Amino acid sequence: MVITLRSSGDPTDTIVNLLLVGATTIPSLIATAVFVLMARFFLVRRAFISSASILLKVFKAVDGFFTRLNDRTTGGRVLVKDYNSLPLFDPVAWRERSKKSLGKARYLFRILVVMEGPVLFICLGTATLSYRTDFAELRGLLLFVWAIAAMILAMKGATVISSERVRETLDALLSTPLTAQEILTQKVAGMNRLMMVLAIPILSVHLTLLLLNIDPQSLIFNFSLKLLFHFLWYTISCVLTTFLTMRIVVWISVLLGLRSTSQSRSAMTAICLIAGWVLLTSFTCRPGEAVFELVRTLAESLSPPVPWQGSGYEESPEQLRHSTIASAVCCLIRLDGGVQANEAFLLSAGNSSVEKSELYYAPSSSIASALTVSGIVFLWQVVLCLFIRALTLWLAPRLLGRRDQRVDHRSSEAQRFTSPSVMGSEVIA
Image 1 (cartoon, rainbow, N blue to C red):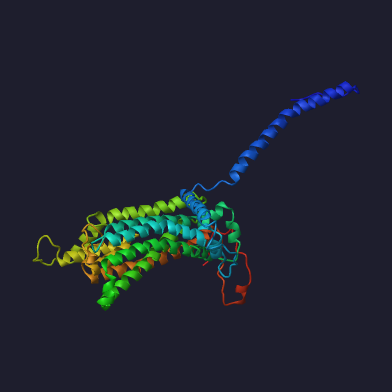
Image 2 (image 1 turned 135 degrees about the horizontal axis):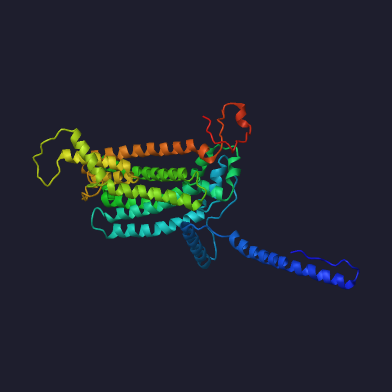
């Protein structure tokens, strides 16, 4: 719109010109004021919006409950206080331990109380009221606790890099003299406290199963090296298998979250993949299902038939051997194969009745077969964990978009700071 102003020296024309200019600027001023108010309203609301993660909301609700409970009961006393420390040789791991909620001791203690309380109550009630030498329902509780632990680890592992991208701190992290492999290794090392906390409820169920199958009084009054070996083997194998399986879940999640730009997308991808792996193998790698019967059929075809004079209702030693081979292969395929193999050894030592539909039925027929399967599955999990870790670290520079230079730490050049290039996409071997 074009406005023509009067240029005569009459004061009336000057007033008219001012009114015309004011009238034309009023709509612009009103629009500007409206947009400023809308920006003030919406930007302030979005500036402090929390994450849409359901699991994070659950953690915040639990943390708020314990904070209110502590304020009402003890007046706000804190036993484990946060302290300001400085990183020594692992700055990324130090940041994960001291600056993240799932790395601080007081938050981890609250998660431990929430998980360990119901588990310990059920385990104590089972050990007190059960008159059997084995309580199969405890294994259902064991798998349920494992599902919660795997979900937490998958969410945390998948978001170690995507969270840096969302906060726009990844470029600053990649500009440090640390290589991509060192960054990821320290990121995972910062989760050690979380893995230890999540392992306590799992090991509590294992301990209850051990005490139900092997009487601890027999170790004192009827001591034998064989019984002591069973006790120590199951204990050590459960601890090692628990942390190995957790490491496998973490490294798979880290690998899946390297290229993701969204925390929710990376977490859901890792959780869905791990859950799909567990569910698919749980239904196909069990007695009577496709994979188990296929492996058993192949084992029978590769060995000559042996006549059996026993009852038709009992399996021959040859059939049990074939079933044990099929169970071992299925344990190698399943993510919870180490748990199944350990239970087979425990039941073989405790002489408990086992349902034939369980994966650990065939190996539990003898201690030798259960021990063999347990050892093979443990070695396979070590190889699998090392392979996934090596694959993740090998792909890390390419997926993070940087070029890591191999530095000879024996030379004097290793002491100099060289800023790595963030723009490269190739890996220099």
